Image (tube, rainbow, N blue to C red; front, side, top):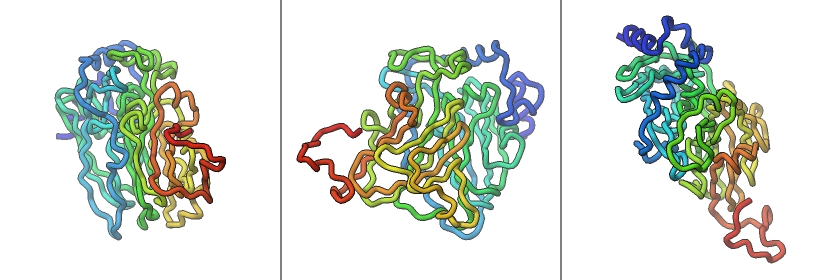
Length: 371
């Protein structure tokens, strides 16, 4: 059944063989095909969903077991219209209606039975390429589904780390930019070090035919993407999605160690991920984690800014000894000031003047903005 479905999906893509959608090596379609896709996803300016920004706290809990197991996972391609910021709508392409797509959390040695669905209301075929998979296209060929169809595959998670998954059909850069990416976390057999709080974010660029803040319906701009000139650079699909100006800030308690998972969907920009007012006490670049359990020896310590390439991830941990507002930013700061790239974390607790005294000269900071 799945082979027949896959063949129909490939026909819908206008290609004759599976090799052209083998993950990241997929050949881009001709300009006329790209224009057809652009026109297909231009729909109503009325939002069809209230929110595409995934809740950073809504992630699976740490794994605490000694034996491998089998997971049944379903991902659904959902094409939705939502606001990037108030008054600005855009046609997003998502996994399960959120950006980034839901975190998949497994243990090294676990088996995943993955079903990929594309509802009949979609305009375009989709699939999923998981960087945690040994197999053609990371599973992209096996999962390609036309609207109204589904496909499935099985894989074993043989190597630990934090890995991106993303759509990988032709025009894959457009699909990723519009929201089709997420993270699969493969914990090592001994698990991750214990922390008090975990958060999950995804960065991507959105290329539109409007300016930042220009009200109305923005359509996808293929030329802007080709020239790598985005309108927005976002965390979790909305301008300042989890900052105080929007749905945030996220609150944590003083003294907690906070682990941040971040996936950079791109499709083109690297992130220079930095916590303003803090530091990555332990950082795991590119989502790499040790198989032998020696996290202290493996991690980079006290890192101010971590480079996260498109198509990669990072894991960073912060200590929270003083109350403050931590700003999570791409330190290419025009992306923060001009294009929407910001989340905020409020540390709630009592001042510790031995570490930080904002009133050392008797100056009142009541109501002041955090730098």
